[in-house]
Length: 99
Image (cartoon, rainbow, N blue to C red; front, side, top):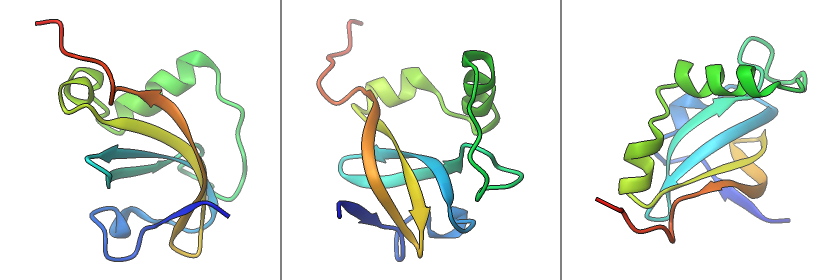
């Protein structure tokens, strides 16, 4: 099973039990972890586009900064201080800044 260990990383303190979550990764290292359903992480929640954008805003996700850092946002499931089944949600790693 593909997974990313969260213990000993910058996001360890952001772990809040089992649940679907997003993980920002810069240069191969986790930098931010936040849950799809922050009030009840273990309960899956189907988000509308508006709710998803609000979730990113609430968690101070700055797409321009992530693009400059050539980072990625992954989606997956947290369990036992691991981020399991990671899939790329938004990939800025191969995009060059147009500025």
